Length: 188
Image (cartoon, rainbow, N blue to C red; front, side):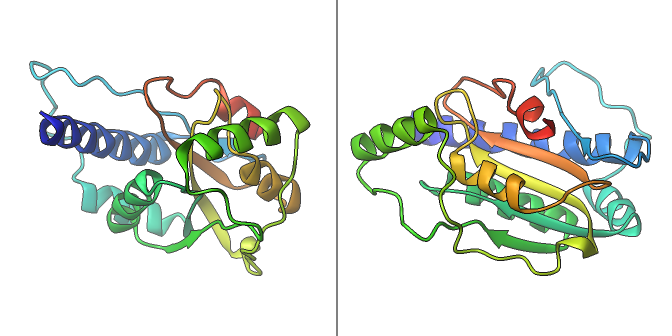
């Protein structure tokens, strides 16, 4: 049963990645930061048009639109797995966002720690530095949904880097709570 759930999650994540890629290809170029959101429908009876591009064609189109960064924060490894799927599909560079002070490895401690950080609106110091952020046109930004919000290191990143004019494609791992409005928080 556990393996079936994992396979289903991986399939849904692949569908999300393809949806994000398709949306980026169809989105208009703007001078401000673009937040790309994707909704997927895992309906086995849904017909996919023959003219739909393949993953490689979509990745090629994105790469022609500029340099890509897949940036992610992952504690348990789930977001890292999705980041690697996206990186394989679209190419570009991939960077794991890490903090100076590591998060607790014990789940219960981590939950309490993350909730307290969120309550204080903390901005943990980042160990990861991206000196060439201006070179990227599209940033896939991945994170787990913690307490219906982004983990605080994501907010530190957003505070420290100017992402104006870049396409931002958030991808979120969660236990059933979905996006929880986090793309709006990123855009703000």
